Length: 192
Ligand SMILES: *[C@@H]1O[C@H](CO)[C@@H](O)[C@H](O)[C@H]1NC(C)=O
Image (cartoon, rainbow, N blue to C red; front, top):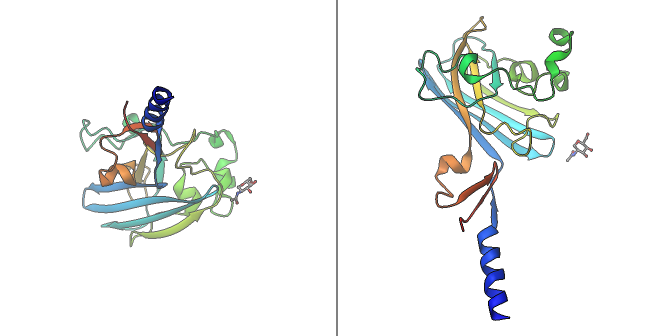
């Protein structure tokens, strides 16, 4: 019995997982624009998106792209879709031929999951935005998670990708779980 318990307890310890707060942050710091865009899961269908940016000039388009930012690529290139990948669109919303008219802030579920400008409107010149997405399309865990992807901000009035930052879980930024093994986007476990 003792031996069984020892194994059972060790097993339990090894595989005890630790859930993460469902919050993730993209930090922006280049070309005079600094700050954060924070995603917080409120409930299974609701994600709060808070932008707190300094240095914007005018309204900017912004989107989630498929890939994280590759820091080994030069800052002039790393925000381009060649490196950040295309808009994040796991439900293939872009296949709708009427996308341009159907996707709007009053009809966000017709927008690509990553079309933050379409869903929430542009990033305003003062860099402050606090909005809820209630479509259930902006997930912070599971199969469609946005964690590990990136936010890209356009130059004013153009489609040129200008600023970008990877979407990183808050706990990773806090340096928690350093001796733990990453198990999924939102769980860590003690390595065996
Ligand atoms: C989330 O959306 C689904 C599908 O519309 C619905 O069944 C569910 O009750 C919603 N959950 C919450 C917490 O509102």
